[in-house]
Image (cartoon, rainbow, N blue to C red; front, side):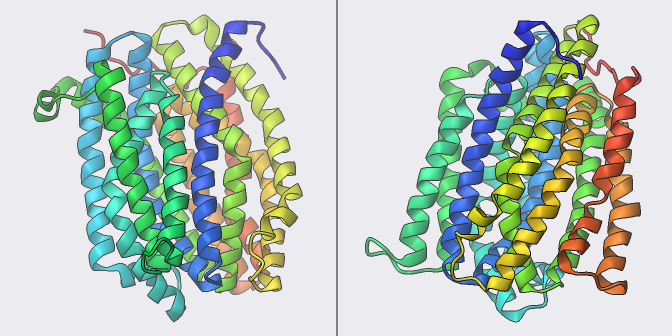
Length: 452
């Protein structure tokens, strides 16, 4: 392991990573509150929201790819202090994100049953999932635009607004879930539909806060109508060249993830519910890793954009050393939190809760490898502009190893559900080995900006 003696690096890491970790904690808390409050309705309701959110997850990951690819450019332009170019990149990003979220909204409104049947054949789960999906999808466009803006602000090291954004969202989500799910304060008891409307209200509040913030405190990044009406052809070409691999990366990865979800969904509603519990804990224990990943991408991009190549290797070795420490700690924490996590669902079948504990144990082991992929693939290599490499090796192992192995484990060997899920995540080990080898060289360092 190697740690830099440059104190300014640590100030930068913690200045970016800690606020983002706080944002992720708030996001986790929103999801956890939804999960627990819906969970009181029963296992099938939790399974329905979990599966419905898999469809939202597809949109979210592709949107992350659009914003994340844009951020690679934006972080490097920020290193050059070229704000005009940043606005042009943002304008293109907003157009693409708006088109994407509109498509997902239309699909959720008009073919919700077909979407649910992709993941499960349980009639009760499908019926409840349709109701939830149609309600929650009204917030898809608002989420995509607001979250894309949050990611852009991270690239220019403006991270604190998201804490206010998600704090208010958490409070509103809990309050409106309490009102609309159970029928408090004279409101009708809408059940799972109430959970969807509560999420929609939170999305509206988030969008309002972001618009006010940009108009008052980040005017240099506020997009004008002129920016949206006109497209800089040179910037557009750069956007297509450099962002398309990231979008393709996320699209191919999420399509593979969808196949994984379909495999898990057909193992039974109890497995879906157990995996839903595990997913919430995974989000909690990876909060610090996600913060480190985002900080890594921003620091690497800014450093390359500023032309400070001498510092780059020193910075990346330090960031990677931090992943070596945080990963095992996160994995151990996931294993230790198992009894506490299942205690939030007292009305679930004990067999479902035991299954959740087994899945969490296996996930804790896999986190050691996932932590390296967070920092190497999505942090160092993507931030460094090595987008095609990340595309190829993030996806190839998923489709050629994890999915075939998971299918065989589920349907040929008929292994227990926790082992099937381990097989479906086996690509993390291979990706970590390849990514570490790549980072040791210099081929990944690429300046993607356009010099006038």
